[in-house]
Length: 519
Image (cartoon, rainbow, N blue to C red; front, side, top):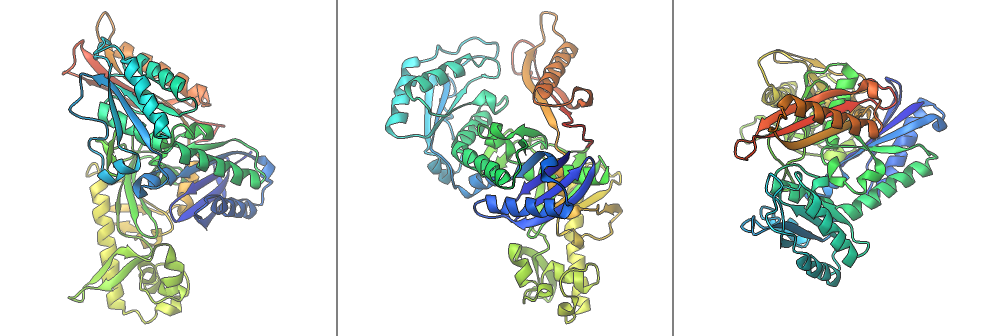
């Protein structure tokens, strides 16, 4: 059976067909407003180039930045009733307190504080105020609010009140989607609440997007199941995305880095994904993107999702190359972007780009080299030095130690990367231009536990870690992972000295293969 991997980016939609560990074909197509036609063009191109029987495609994996872009652009978001159970505690910090004002306005700025919530050890702060929940339900109906997000103080310890509140809202507002914070976020009230509100605001878009993917695949004659890649590079069933779109927020850079690890077989490296406008830079650990240690900002909102520690610089194949007032060569951050095939000199345009410099110096064979013959070699060399300096600075920022580790260059713009970068070896794998689609195609199934344990009454740290690992493994197997392939990739415990009961936060994550792929 074959696998079809698709990555829907802001500019390009990439598709690959894989048989086992072999990439049979890779194709790029322009991303379209309706998503569907761009996906169809890419997958049809990949299937045709591979020359396979589409009936033998067993699974389709899709990565998308659709939902991240919706938050950043403040588009396609629903109004949400944000209900927090915790009074009289937490009143000084209402829901969405640290959100940008424009985003608050788009999602309705409807925060409600209700009596309820728990202490760390499970004791009630207050009984749930059911009458207030019923009153809020009336406002939701009267104002035609499209979704609700319920967050309870210390709900990861006890989610009973969240479930009670959800049942009440559903009773008074039949059919209203209700998101519980315990299904989305982790310990940390404000970040967990913000994640739940963002998720609720994206539910309608998620439903439309998943339906569009399903239609695109059906129109292409594909009847196999399809999956969506998550922030951590693992998979979830397509229908799950209808309920949890926020879990895909960082799937784009994650797919590129996972694809880079797969194509090279290198598990410890720095990955530079060079696109048309920007380059994403991050480091690999055990073949997975290193995770950000602090909260991650998405569209101006602090979240505590597990996100890859990736940053962007304004350098890509379409970056503009110019002289400043002193005559010095400058590169970017302005770019031709998706217009590169019309505006760059090698494609017959009038704009000098980073790609033109690579062609002029004989470092790449793209477009018509005769069209950059007039570029001054001295100036081209100076521009190349500027490009290399930008890449060196970015890679140095990602290095975790002075030990020399490889740099993997992927993405369509990786022709800009030199063969060596300072003291570091540069690897440019085959199929580098579609590494993100490869990353989607080889994604694995994960299981995760993140919980606070009380180490007392004979319960030790080792027993809690073992219990968390067992539960995470069971979750991965239930989601479709092959039991024999499961390995632990994250295991951490952090004593919470400010809480009673010898509390320790334990986080364990496992991954396993689907269908016997190696990655």
